[in-house]
Image (tube, rainbow, N blue to C red):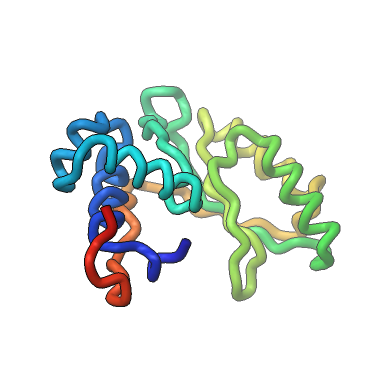
Length: 164
């Protein structure tokens, strides 16, 4: 299913779930104007189709001892598929790495790291050459300019009336 397959009710459900993933089904149904049973069927379909891929709690890194955050741009030693996969597997084993994304441009990978302090961050940075990084550029995160926002959705104009 793609965004072009979503009708207005699907978009309303996904928007509500992005705002509050733990919303009870009855409350969600009321918010989108459907019966609880119809809402539950739609949520199940949106999950099965891979539109809704999970419900997660947002954790304050400061309160759990991981308040030093950094973004690390990495250039890999090798650019073949095996080297990239080895790097990805190694990074996946590093609990301080919250996210790793392949990027275009002069760098290959962008890491989002949450560390307990400078020593913890330094451990991550020291490990990078051992797992295939030629160069790493580190930027400390000072604070949010804009918090993560929901993914924008537009109902398909071809679906016309919403399905129940």
